[in-house]
Length: 313
Image (cartoon, rainbow, N blue to C red; front, side, top):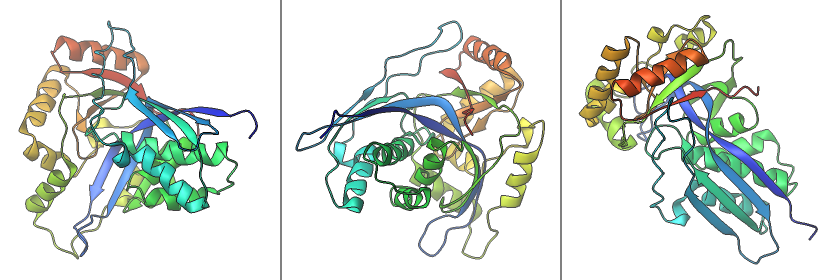
């Protein structure tokens, strides 16, 4: 083998700016429509080719960074899952199986995105691994094939593949397999708030079903409404919505308390992303985001950090 090559890339977090959920299908899965954006708040993935007979995986918390005057640092991610269940590891295994040969690597993953936070950190790791392996080993898989592989790993992985490939803003429908890149009509500045606990996704969907008592044939996800929201300029934060917010509050009542406390103190809408637990605020500018972070800290919010959508598109 020639001199080993190395690739380092960001694994961006994801936020659902709007999320519409349909009733469960006969198989129990819920169709959705969501305006998803990828952020510059990210894990960092490094993949190096090796001559070793087996691949090595080093997954550890990233060192805390940030200006303490403007942000509370995100607590280090607790790496408490077996390597076989890690999505980056599974993406590597899937790619090897697909091409029918070993792809020996040393993979280093520095985790910043909290787990169980609704930010698709694991999905982003898997997506960056698929794209990185394709590039490093010159596998020449086209985007369609990468997206097909992504769908085997989770509902958010396909969007994250598109984001890593330079499309950070999309309308996602179906079970996450239909992705329509949207033009980013305006800069979107966000403040992320981390309550310090997670929301179990399965429990949130069960709470959604109990709340709506839905059955197959009820109203489908409203993709037209979401497409219209994405085309609105300037963005109205009060118009954003998430069908899983109320179920998440029912599962974790303390999340509602954090949301209400922030809304009352900051006088601005505070939203839930995905099934929770991360909250977000839409800011008018980077300076406004910094002000909101400082105000949130003064209001004793658990954790806050600013992030903006990726500029590459």
